[in-house]
Image 1: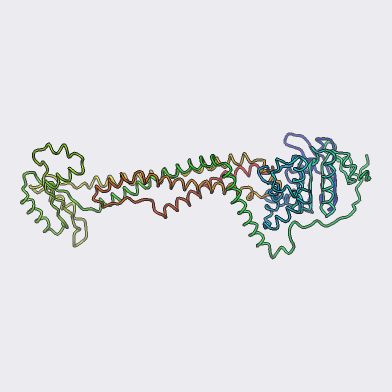
Image 2 (image 1 turned 180 degrees about the horizontal axis):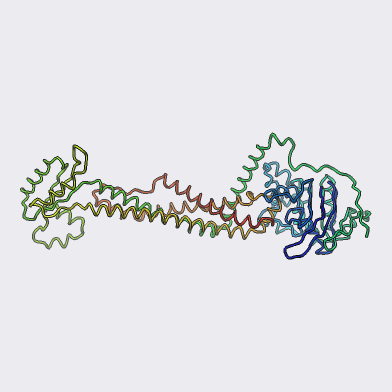
Length: 226
Length: 335
């Protein structure tokens, strides 16, 4: 599903975020990417979403070499990825429903179909009764769940999340991770960047550890607790 | 630390983003998507300009004024041209007879002119008639009362006729002969003045064209600037939409619709302004025109030109927004 082949990313400032990074993630896996801040977690996700391009090496997604994707092709690649952001990136002047519906609108789905799928996604994150609310009046955890509903509504084959629990308390964080795990169970590939080691340990999924842009560990911890 | 590859519990095929049998329904899907996108842009753009009524009103008024100005000039020119063609077609030669010419002599002279093949009509305006007309139109009626005798001469208004054989204009020849007649004091036939008026009108037409061009450019800039500010204030939203996989067209379209609405609304404002000016100046114009024996009627802006104004203004709005949106959204690509 995802294949990084000797990827190096150096920013214009000269800062090298990733160095000679190679790994592979199979379809249907759930993988955590962790490491200290500045280790290159976000850069890794940005390369997948074509927000950044690698300086060297290649990134392949679903068998397609992203290096060959032209600018015009970027939106199509991104439509196949559900993205969850630490700061949610909700559209504050629209309702919860409209926010979640946006990927389907972009895909051009008919309205009835859209409404059905949006309600299903909101139901999944437990916010069905808040569909008319403005995102600004929701709590941080609720906003993040709206963001997740938006990421999964189009049923993308890949879900990526950058510090999705960054500002949430442990209980909410666990709930969010359970949502990701559920999404994996229905067949999606899930990639989550986080530095929350407790959470990672609890989930018992594969973990990639980055340090100064290098992959220093790739393991699966035994499931503990819950 | 040890590095080892994780064993995979299961590999499920990823669900397709869209429904099954696609190749056959592809084009229909695309058309429907296109329709949905336009419906979305249509309503969201209306909501956006409706959310800022004052800013919208201001923009629309500025654009409306810029469009109304060349429109009013065009209207003025159109009317003056109507008048001048009337004048040019008129073959009237005003012949002032010498003051000492008696009414009977004048009548005989008129008869002799009527007999000519190059003369169509000869009207006699006696000094009394002239005085009455002068009194009613010039506003000098009080001053005229002071006069003991009527100082006005008899006037013959001669309408020339084209040469019956070769249809050429025989007027200059006729004017020359009238001038040399001893009974005639003055012949008024201002060919040169008419030519000059024609030249002035042509110049006026050019001025209107240039002005219309400049002001159209002005409206483009107004729309462009408004849309640019709108894009800037929505930078975060645009970035999010791009991350969600929105194409450039999808992000740009609402802005184009906003430009379209601005253009259309400013077109209405311009027409409204023209209408108001027509109402305000209508009376004065009617009075002026009545002094030309009601031969000319004020021609207002017609339906078709009005419709054209709306089409052009809407197109200007769309184009202005397109110029700016294409540029700014391209620069801000991967957000």
